[in-house]
Length: 168
Image (cartoon, rainbow, N blue to C red; front, side, top):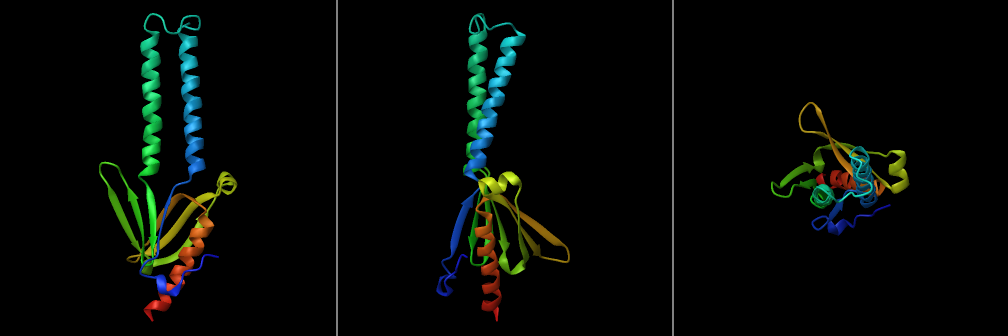
């Protein structure tokens, strides 16, 4: 169980990005798709014997350029999306050019739950749902593909319990 020292409320801050194994699986699948599409191009246009002749080199370089920037996009998206958990709030950071921060106060959180798929249990990632009450209707904030979600669930639950004791 993750213990929060009683004297560390002002300095508690934990950051987490989405799951690295899930990112690697996505990049691997992306690579397989690009290879399959390039092989389909070679088959359809009958270019197996001389794939780089008569315009084939241009197609090959355009294909590699597209593949590189698609992988770069996924890596940049992974790098620029992360969550911070502090003693008073959960902060969602996202964006490269247009950066966005969303703050969710822990005093509004009613419950914390974790959902994991079979692959999520194998690779140890999941989605953490925070149910917040800012008005009459509940708001579901989903922290998607968080590594070690049970650890963060315990941390948030402990922090919620301690948050209630601090207010008294």
